[in-house]
Image (cartoon, rainbow, N blue to C red):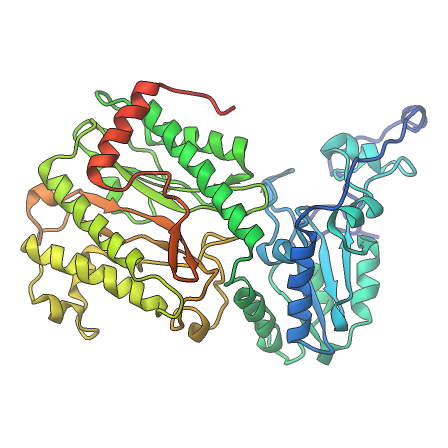
Amino acid sequence: MAEERTQQGKPADGTESHDPDFPEAFLSFMRQGWRDTELPVGPRPEVPNHAKRRAALAEAFPGETLVIPTGTEKVRANDTDHRFRPGSDFAYLTGDLEPDSVLVLRPGGEATLFMRPRSSRATDEFFRSRHGELWVGRRPTLKEKSTELGLPTADLTELDAALAELAPGRTRVLRGFDARVDAAVRPYDGARDEGQPGRDRELAIAISELKLVKDEWEIAQLQEACDATVRGFEDVARALPADRAVSERLLEGIFALRARHDGNDVGYGSIVGAGEHATILHWVHNHGATRPGELLLMDMGVENRNLYTADVTRVLPVDGRFTPLQRQVYDAVYAAQQAGIDVIKPGVAFREVHLTAMRVLAEALKDLGLLPVSVDEAMDPASTVYRRWTLHGTSHMLGIDVHDCANARKEAYRDGPLGEGYVLTVEPGLYFQPEDELVPEELRGIGVRIEDDILVTADGSVNLSAGLPRRSDEVETWLAEQREAGPRLPG
């Protein structure tokens, strides 16, 4: 009979096709002489926060069972995996960061975390399996994980039986994260697509809308991520020479070092765009080089160890000073960003932030002689010709994802009002492509975006990433100070 295999083509017992056939003498020797240890775990301080979120989600679906997987490891190359990053909604509800786990939330809020427990010395798994402790380190026991997260736990091997008992019409699944779960609980409404069909889609929406309002603990996590991001930008500025070229990848790597040291990782692929690369909105190749006299755009954020991420963009003049034309473009973007930030408060429409910033940019484009129509005509929804030079929206929600709350309904997010506790980016930009013959030659290849992470408070807003300067003169002073301080290693 063919060996049982996982959804990624690997044996279910965690062995590999190239594993040797060990002699019995070796196996017998490996099973002897091991001392057992316990992990020194206690309840995490954020346990009550996660419990409140699960209770609110259960209340939204009375009498139903909700199944939320975190996802599985993904193969990078043959027998190596990408570094695992937990599913955001799962982490939001549990705080667990391990792969393969599944949260089952039953009617009334009773929860069970199905997880892969430690590979004890009771079987050969601890040294023969790719999940074994000698290969990947000590995993928590069921009891240890339960203590840490304040959640009842069960062995992952019991999951199939638990899922088989669920009533199809009274169960919802967060789909697309774990093929095993998706196959075990078929969509009740008969949908065949691989996304979130019908009733399951409502579960994804509900979680996203719960995430719109950040509690005090989450705000502290975001502030921590922003503070680490400030340090990362400082690291880059201290290593950026004013008089010679360096590669974009070097600067990307310097920031990544800070992200891995102070947090979990970068929150998204870092954008390091020197010169004309700054005009490419999602430039992630980072294979160019800086040049004195040009601008350097960097869109980067640290994801902290609880997976909350910053999202910050700054533009630096490589040689230390903006040219008059660079400064004119930069100051226009700064004015647009400040105008957007100034209107933020509870009750203001999410789109109002964007429209406010865009009018300032449209006026700047008119001053530059680029708009073919008046500012009012350009802002008309039937025209929006100003967007040739600023394609993207001004804001998105931020939290445990860089684009948080993405499954929320339009009326609760894009077409809705801001609420106290929301965190959003404000990031207007102007981009003059090198091939754009409708702009003067001296503007071509200039790209400027300024982005900050803004918390909506009861009477206005707070800039969580204010540790980095924004005004052009302040940026020049800050860059000089960083260079004078010199390179440093995280510590």
